[in-house]
Image 1 (cartoon, rainbow, N blue to C red):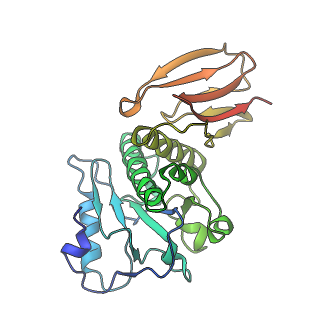
Image 2: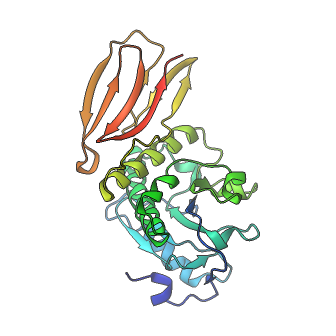
Length: 271
């Protein structure tokens, strides 16, 4: 695989050697760049070019837009993506080429970018787990974690702002944060299910309960909200993101679950 900052040496130092083992912690960023909504989307390419010319530290392992991604540096090197002591040594950084404030303004762009980001994170987690001798460990990285959990060595997804209180990317303080978190985590799970053989035992991944106007909804990866507090009948629907068939099930006791093979993506009982 080609890496942009290896092939295009940057104007100032943007990466270095790792001195600690990767933990499977993925830091999600936005570079606060302009959204390119006119295909082909050149957002990732433009950010990669900017990083190669900037004179201050600031880089990622990969940058992603709605239709392409650019690997910047190999996994075994540390990117300069978090200005918190030691964090870059054991984390992997990916940046979605938009501005934190722009989420929700371009729904089609958001959906495509989050699907591709899920694919790229899943690919990294599979590589990380393979290097650690057990590819099934990739499932440990599905779901959001806190800074305390990350420092304790737990794998998972985390916002840049969790490590740096002065940063609001990728969507740390956005009103849609809960929905964006749920969509990305579920996209990562779906991508892993396509990449890897299904786990031998069901694995659970958080799927979000969203509260709007004092009503609770279960948020699914295609953005559909199921009203958990309403009187809607139970039912079964199917859809195929990326060719992998899933089933959306709402049982008679109004618990909800996503299935793909024997992968369970949460089972949240209605209260």
